[in-house]
Image (tube, helix red, strand yellow):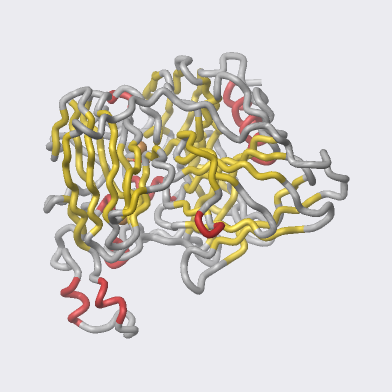
Length: 475
Ligand code: C2O
Ligand code: CU
Ligand code: CU
């Protein structure tokens, strides 16, 4: 069996079933070969036509990459699509030259070429990988996969599950709607699709057994769709956000908010009744709630009479604690997009006034950060908007002056979220992607300890492409 086949089989098994610790690990656990290549996938069930997709190793999501904390990894990427690509290992604090931003951190990988990524993941947790080149189309056609970095000691759960969630815009004949980069969408909510898949297919049910404790790793791999997940009849406890363990806590009002690129790990004690089904609902967008899947209990009696009483806490990762007293303060203002007042009138999309209310309808970019619009996916010669001295503690104030939600992502670092619009954030969790509501002001803090030029951008990819991006330098 070839190494590639082995990886594929491993990924397939892992994604459709549980992830027992160590299962699917190749002999050399940290050596992967990943080919970006076209394939076909049955996203929406047997009754619907197959879809032409772009994949990592032939499947959507791509091969599951499992690494071990503190152990060197080597990932060889082959480009078998007909355009330049790169791979970005989202959330991993790695050396700048391995960050996968074309022009800024590496030359693009040309069709037929190969690039070897090598790094040692310092943090255990749930991460993911995706292209950083023509991202709107490449991610929108399916190029994405999950990356799990295992803790040094196994965590006490009955099953370790991954739900890689992705949003697609499918046409009636099963194709992926082509028009990427619609200017109107780019100035609004971005390319939200019409089909949400769980591990690469529309899901009707996910099996469970009464009494078990499950660690569920949620990844939102969508271009633009924000999710707000409710688990009927269950009380999931958030134990990590964006790969970083946090104080175990229940989500606010029982809803797990998951912006594009965000990950949330929850622990769920399966306290439902054998034989019953419970809905998992995404009701983020008003009036557009849908059933993501159902948790389907088998008939077996509960695994144990009472929930497991092992601790829910995950071991913390080695992040440097910012010194808030001496931290340097900076502000980033997010501006642009369709204006709020225009959306409220109830009149929909007509009227020339509305058109002029958008920045950039004259052909320029739709968004800016501190008055500057960096567009695209990254390219040579991008100037850093801010330069931090290596080792300094930084407090960044992100000001969303727009009428839209933005999951703001910073490469190469994790940020402690201190406050939201003047209110202290209860768990001050670490995140690499911070979801900002319209008009939110969020303060984050971090130690600028990873040298290089790092992107900071909105992970609604249309927003990034249309100007909601900047570069921060750690020198
Ligand atoms: Cu997940 Cu610059 O991105
Ligand atoms: Cu990233
Ligand atoms: Cu945005």
